[in-house]
Length: 171
Image: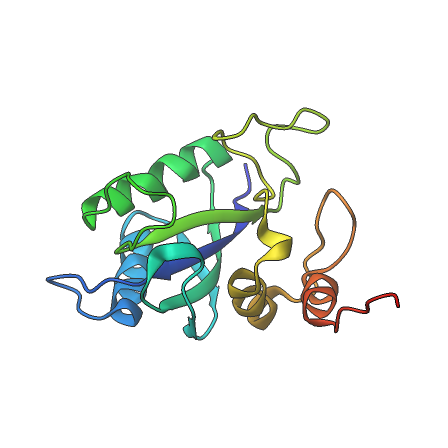
């Protein structure tokens, strides 16, 4: 079985006692993925973005293209394990967090396999709201701009341009 590719989003807006500031937390999370046997193919620059919702502090955000033989549920379990190792606790939806690791896209297309989509709170690949989030699209565009969404066929570049296009109002 050949390894699958994933696009992962990484974010942090809290210092970590051992790893330091949010940008260093992201670098440490990438090291943890590599130590777990995940191949790091490409890594975006770390981008600072304002907090979404009442999270308060600005975020450090990045994206990575990785390779693994893990299926999406096993990859998600690995990501959640790394979050726990870094001290992430489930809590407020928009609260500050030491690390947030999400599967955005997968070379296998959709999970669960199309046409079934997961229920809210369950794993869904592509990530449910990735096309509306500048803080996800911008880092992903640095490393996988031509990756196509399996649901629409549109590229990451397309979604970023659409999100950043001026909104026209009828008058």
